[in-house]
Amino acid sequence: MKGFSMANLGRLCLCAGIIGWLSIASAADQAAAPSSPIPVQAVNPAVNVVTQVAVKAGVLSCAGRINQVTNFLIAGSQGTGAALYVPAVDPDRKMVSVSLEIQNENMPPTYASASFAPNQANGCGAIYEAVAYWDIKCEAVAAKQFAGLKRIGAMRKEITMLDGGPELKVFLMPAGSGCVSIKKEAVQ
Image (tube, rainbow, N blue to C red; front, side, top):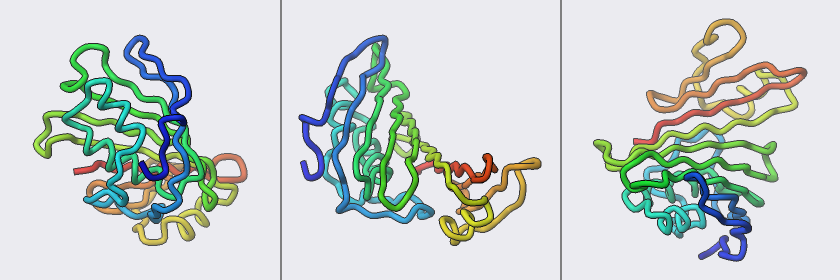
C-alpha cells in the first residue's frame, strides 16, 4: 500500500464498539485544494489503513466510500492519527465514523470527522467535517483558503457562512485573534 504501512497501525483494539487509534503515514503524493469538493473518484484508489481496519471489522458495503473520503481528507498529509468507531453488532448495516488528526505542511493541524451510512440511495452516504484554527482573521481565511466559495452571510451573528454548492459549506468562527474554519460536505 503506497503511503501506508500495517506497522503504522499502533494500538488496535475493539472495545465497546470503538476500534482504537491508527497512525497513518504520509500521503504526500496526493493533493487536494482545501476548498475543493471531494472528487467523485478517489485521488489515490489505494486501500488505506482506515479502510483496511473497517473491512476487518466487517464494514463491507461502505468500504469504497470510506476509502474515497479518507484518501481525500489525508491527501498531502505529513501524518495522520485516526480513531475508528464501528458498531459491535452488525457493523455492515449501521453507521460507522472516523475521527482524524491531520498534519499538513501547508495548513494548521486539522481535526476531521467523517460518518458513513450504508443502504442509502447512493449505496453508502457520507458526510465529513474538517476543523482548523487559523492564526489570522476570518476575512483573511475566506480570501486565502476558500476564495472560490461564495459568501452567504452570517449564520446568526458571529459565524460567517461560505457556499460551495448544495453539499458544501464552510463556517468561519472568530476565535481569539484568529479564526476557526469548519468545512462540511455531504458526499453523494
